[in-house]
Image (cartoon, rainbow, N blue to C red; front, side, top):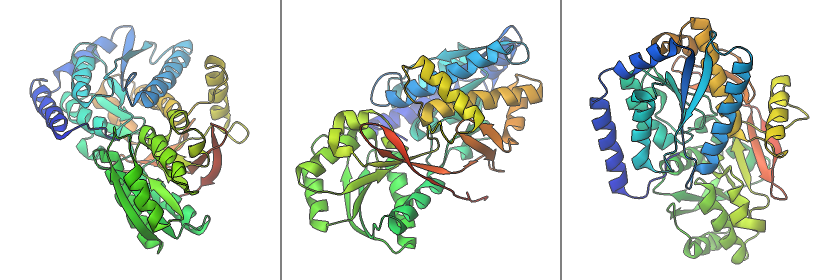
Length: 399
């Protein structure tokens, strides 16, 4: 997911990548990280937002990472060495992400980085990590073009290309959404990419897109867009952007008297959705790669949920905390099996991961290192909570 404020910001980010990668020394920072890990500590960096519009993703990812590190350290660490999570905050700013990555690598000397939870910043960080031979594993990026960056780049999340078609089929065949309106945030790469996937899936299902409207991240007035949707009379709205705009958009939908529901990807997965949207977002459907369902969860997931609740006022964990936890555990498993904290060695073991029993589900990396996860968890907002509506089994494409 990429949050861009303007074209100049993207250009600035690209310039930062080029500048920082050019000055990285072709893997010397990673060598320093490996030497650092030869001591008593293995440092794993967190890349994400603790403040700003994307903080809901980053805060939860970091919680999960810290839970994993604490458990590993109670068990003796990794290869007898203590695990330390090195955190930084890019403030939800694309312009800050590259410098945070560089700091984690060259100053903090991490051997791996977990993050960013968004696709855009993951794709910004990827070339820097690849250049420096530091493993990067995103616990949230779901858009295209991530693994293609290089063999040090991974993610452990449910891909949009798998989830969106499964959800579209459910909306059309089970809920009867034959006519659909789609809302796209045009300055958000995640939203633009997800819209294309939904459009293709809907066309294969012979569903009609009766209206397509554009917004931008940061907008607050959606009256014109909702008026167009109202005139088109759709059965439902597919919203491919983030929770901030999603909540406000549904307030306008209700204000104009429309009694239809919204569905979207995990960009909507945040309590901020109902904090901004209130009763207007009741019934909104959001897909994710994890749902906290204590009654039906696996033993390891039940234990994770229990520990999370104990540390967070009985609140349930979300996808980001679960996948942040799993990302650290995946790295730990790879280092142990490789018997090395050298990224050039444990990244090859990581790439061969098969049927990893994570708390967010079973994960296998394809030959192109893309994650295969099932099922798709479709959540619904009820009484200002995300509750499981449907676990949709899918078979991810293998090529």
